Length: 311
Image 1 (tube, rainbow, N blue to C red):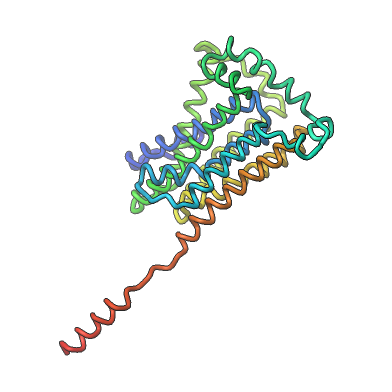
Image 2 (cartoon, rainbow, N blue to C red):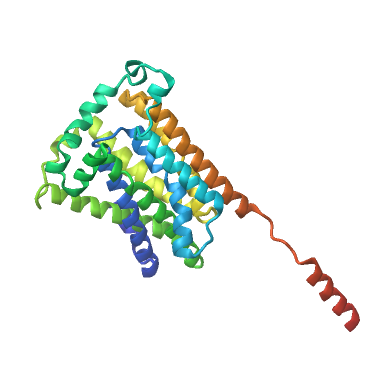
């Protein structure tokens, strides 16, 4: 709630716009947190990279922007990547790789997700039953909330940055309102988990927990949202999704360094396909955005001729 004072005496409409964007960002954060309970950081980030495909679709449906054929190609490629990531094709068998060598952490991953998969139908409701039927972790489905929440927030932030272009401090106000929305909903989540009462937070004073909360609350939330707002003054939602698409690379790197996670053959290939889809979709949009405006030479010449005749 450190962003709340920044909303004092600011434009009401801009604040409401920021709160709206914050709701969608919160959807992305909540989906990410819940998904990480049953899937690895690397896989969660790969699914999150579908944002770069989701953004052009939203632009077409909501803002009536035409969908380019390359965007459709990118979407199909990304879906195929997700299929590979989920093991619909066993590349270990196709390439003759021994599972013990290809999946060094398979036992650990299975142990982490087994409780949610094996008892999904009994304890997790319709969503868990669906995951159980498909033979995947519930987190794989929940993780899809990331591209929806983050992707739609990109398009809305871009829209409001343009709509309130003449309003002072619009970037700071929209970003602060987003942070307030994220913080408030997170607080409600805590109350829900503890049945309406605040828990004892004494254990959170341990140094490593304080550092974790500070990093996730300040660096990856507040600072990231402020920088996103600054960037979207000039960049488009598609541009933002390009940078966002690099998250799987960083998530995999930190997952390996800090959590000792290792990706198997299908994860590498599926992730590469998804990243290829991100690249295809992004480059096609960038080409259109940087294309210079054409000048009607005939009309210009005609105007010049009329001017000369008049004189």
